[in-house]
Length: 449
Image (cartoon, helix red, strand yellow):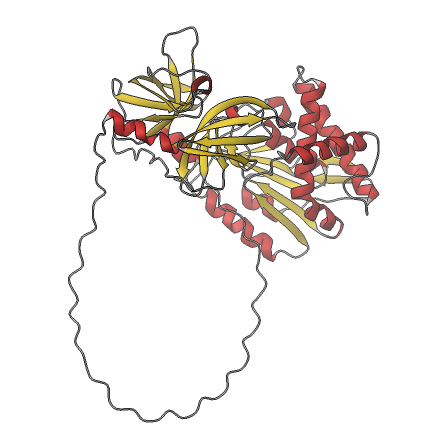
């Protein structure tokens, strides 16, 4: 069956909710739309869409705020084989439905063909990696919708698009006949414009990060409580004595104390909250290293996206702890901010993120902690030398020396608060180093700090 994107231009999220695609035996028409930017009513419209879809008859609905990541080496190999089998015409994802498997194979070919048309530099390995991740995400997120598709209208809202791999997932969903709306409050970023040619745009307003809540499915109604047995008549009791309790006047709320400046020795002791991350490939071999910062007591670690990008698993070392903590848990990431969050099964003291009580200034002293060149938790000091906006990301330029391996490390003020995450430097210059600004960190990790 041929899939075509409906040419009718929608102008809002409610319009997407209230209109449905139509299909014939030969052709399936779908709506493929992106909402660019944000507005004061965006979250309200998304909540209203959830409510409307829950009660809509003959409608299968899903809203996602993040996509599953394929990182387990065993699963990676399994999906590489599935991709090879799918290219060979074998039924690998839906054994009970060969027609649906064949349709998925055709949709995947169409999506990859469009990617190749805009990415002339795409080699066979990179193409396979895109396709394997798409297959995995299709099985995890789309199976339920696709199995209900013939008897229902299918709708998907994806609120976590941050780059080309995520946009390709939306393309695949639409190609499979699911009405798809992609929310892009921060804009399309580096997604090639030609790749979005068939995705109609709804302009929503200025670009800004938005924290979308998880979609809550309807829970089954609780069972009715058994009828209550009649209680026996209570025996008369003596009249209660009356006591007068005097309540103290409510105390005024305490103001948050401004942290005091710390000595260099006290700042260096904060290295207990900064970790070294070793990155392993699909075979378990180490392929790189970087640093990370504890931002939540339950083992959530902030690092750079580029530190973990090439990894399938990660080893985390903590100061004064001989154990090595292995993890594959990538909680979230944002390629434009170059930020990611891992999790290990260990409690840690988190570093406080600067509260923006006043703007940072050039010339302020700063302190960097990281593991440059694998030298675990090295410390250095310097000053803020400038503020830069690079590809829409706010950065702090500083002079504290860092090297390869410092990426993901902490940039602190003299009070020991996290004002940035060390991201890189300019090798041709002397101590021209950059850190992602604390405001980007607060926006990205709002649920953790």
